[in-house]
Amino acid sequence: MPLNAPEDLSRIIETLYRCESGRILATLVGLLGDLDLAEEAMHEAFATALDRWPHDGIPEKPRPWLISAARFKAIDGIRRRTRFDGVEKDLALHLEAQMNEARINEASQEEEIEDDRLRLIFTCCHPALPPEGQIALTLREVCGLPTEEIARAFLVTPATLAQRIVRAKAVIRDKAIPYQVPLSQELSARLGAVLQVVYLVFNAGYSAVATGAELSREAIRLGRLLVDLLPEPEVMGLLGLMLLQESRRVARSSAEGELILLEQQDRLLWNRDQIAEGISLTANALASRRFGTYTLQAAIAAVHAEATSTASTDWRQITLLYDGLLRIHPSPVVELNRAVAVAMCEGPEQGLRLIDGLLAREELANYHLAHSARADLCRRLGRLSEARASYERALALAGQEPERRFLAGRLQELI
Image 1 (tube, rainbow, N blue to C red):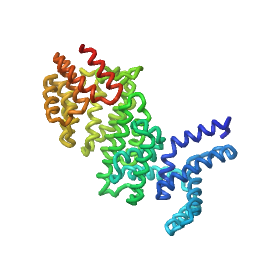
Image 2 (cartoon, rainbow, N blue to C red):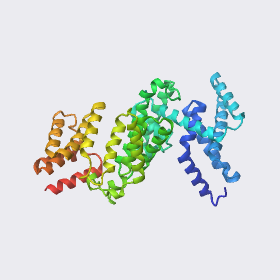
Image 3 (cartoon, rainbow, N blue to C red):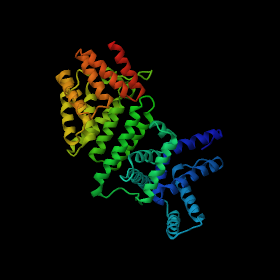
Image 4 (cartoon, rainbow, N blue to C red):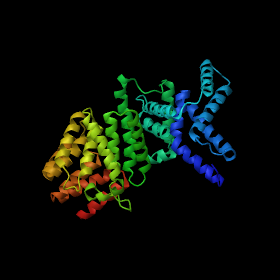
């Protein structure tokens, strides 16, 4: 491939790293069985590309080239080690044997690479790792996102994020966690942790209205990968849920970054392709009759997506779906959402009664959305002093600046 300037090559390699490093690393981890060794070999392979490609040209298939170069680097690195134990000798011999094998056809190689990525996802989300370590490691090693970018999204310093990654790697090494998808009898229990991490990543991006698109895209990309490799109902349900929520991204905020509530959004701005795909996935998951929380949440999002306005939304169906969600996953947040749906179909008095009952239990005492929902219902009922007090409480608890501006605006309207 002809290059017009050194900057062209740098840009191409940077794009390759961003798009392919997760897949390349997964393959190398599968070969080497060591995350640190695989990372080191991959970085050396990219450095070699920077050195050689200006003279040799960019190979027709850059990813296999980089994997092959990383294998050579790993063998060289193992040989250089002064304390050369038996295990490492075996590994070096194994890698050399692989290098001498006939080329694997492209189709099976693609399949192996995707299997490697799945193994890496399950390793990064192993229950022995703390949740914050699971997220950091998944985004860094599976998605290939820079440490600084992940740190910025989770509002921590790069040093803190790097420490989480180091600790997570240490757990994998010290506990000798294998790079493999769990056996079928363990898969259900382990799959839950993987889906939870993917959804946490998505929500981190979705909550950051102005800056979170990249994280949400990564979560959706992981969701697609999981559906391709493990087409279980809940995996389809999670991908459907993320697509349906993401379809509203453009309509959720103004050009100035101000929040726009669901009832005021311009539904013509919703992404119809994402809605169609999300609804199709959700329908398939529901048809299995083996669905769980993600599928039910996706079904609720689908009811919203199919309505042309808040007034025409089937709130009774949404309430029934929340009833189902409460049966399999009881939580005060689900109760709060159900109370809002009840308010929409039975009137604000009914919804307010449920929310007051929830707040009396104090489980949501510090949850700003509970106070915000109460304030909104009080406003609709004309109980303005109560509405003002609840908005003030919500404002005191809200952490995101767009939410704070929205609540401050609502308070201003009541003065």
